[in-house]
Image 1: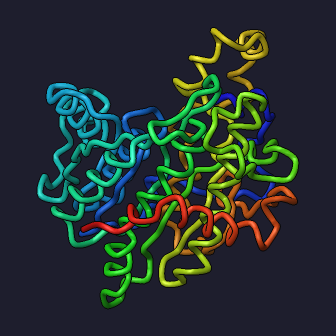
Image 2: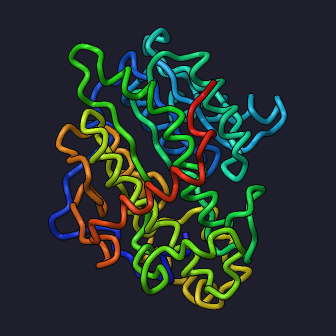
Length: 338
């Protein structure tokens, strides 16, 4: 992603946690997981690793609507990558323990699509153990969602905030089950939150394209809001563990698409393999926060499993509550299913 080369993030820290998915992901038997943006590189590989090693009952890939053939192809790809051996033959494991992969339509720029996604999910499931807010955009021109919000903010933050509120009763019900203290919300943020506009979230112009801001500020503002969301969720819902993740430097499709726009990205292509990691390595922070029993709610993590400092604006104790109140007003009448 662009933060790989523009923000200069670290992939590892000297005190990073030793984490190997095959060794450290615990059994997730019987659990249900929903990952937004799971048709893309990071979300898809996260689904693959969780299915391969954790074997939850079901993983929902929540992404932009596509035709039935494309959905079937994606579900098939995730299943094959999770369970087929390297030589192309299926492993001789117990087929009954394999995770069922399901696709569910979700357009985070559309409140009606988000509500439909939540309604469909809750009509099929009575539990949700891990909600991973993974979808996102970066470096898009000044645009607005169908509701009029600046696109980075509307998709990266506000769409996820609405989805989380709609699914919260299911998360709470799951957390209330006996011996089930590991229900989680995993928020994919970025160290790019530090380049949000001076003064933090610019509430007065969020229902514009924010064209006077740089793309980095528009992106950073949305990622700052996601940290605020995580912290307020942790405060309001202590029975659910909420944490935010900075993925680090990862070679993704989103990064590749930036080559057309960014001279800096193009110039660093020859050396990028020396300071970027492939997707299967890059998603280890996602996996650690989603599954490790030592994850602390309310924490922002660098790779892998390293509690990290956030910007001064993100540390402001008033910010998450102010954001929550603004969000409640914007989503009034939308954040409860009929």
